[in-house]
Image (cartoon, rainbow, N blue to C red):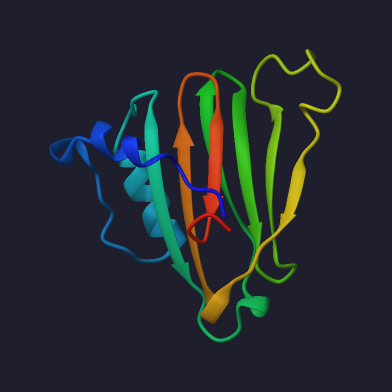
Length: 133
């Protein structure tokens, strides 16, 4: 398991937290769009429950825009049992030949549920699934 350092919790400002009450991905996307510009430092927690079998659920993606035509995409494919981080359009990517290569990792969905935590700052993105698995 890998988890963010415990000291990170001290940086959270309770009154600054924005919480979506839940619903379909389309509802969450509309809510997020209505938030306007978000700060450069983000700690995003997302939970998803797949009705029936997670292996029958459709894939989805979270696209984090960092500038004009610059973004990183996190894709989850429940049917394939995996998660992918694609940094190929995240800005300057030519400093290492493997940096822009999308990374695919296996992903368990215990009980048909997924927990994601994304930590984003000015120069990096960390993705934690299912409490650090």
